[in-house]
Length: 161
Image (cartoon, rainbow, N blue to C red; front, top):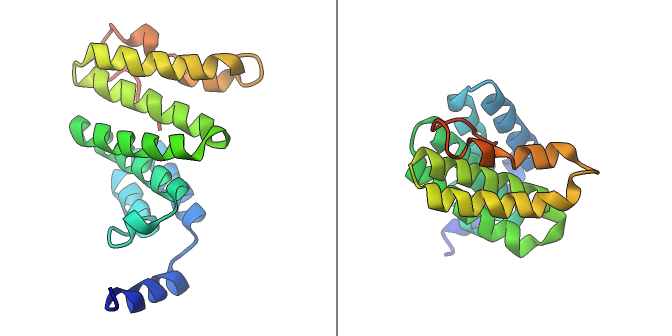
């Protein structure tokens, strides 16, 4: 434990801003630059301190790692990351509801690509139910939870990030 204190102190004083790194990772994912996204998430969420991050940072990290895994075709690994993110979004409550819905949608799409239709339907139904009250005020949020229509279509149809 004492040996890790200097490392944590160094990381705290030299680590770039978490939010900027997450945005950099998201931007890289938008253009499918998985390597750049992975680098940004690795800087924002160093493995050696990942478990000690606040719940919101863990959730952002896990969701990002899930998207990266999905893009690499590692659906089982992606689902594990999304589940960890969801556990943290749930702890954080209503102020992070939109992030929870996006992660549920991504998990449902991941399950669909794995051929786990029952799991996909369950998770996507939960995402849609959570998003439904916002249909008038935030149509983009309910649009993000709409892969239910594609559930029985071709695998890989929707990847939420």
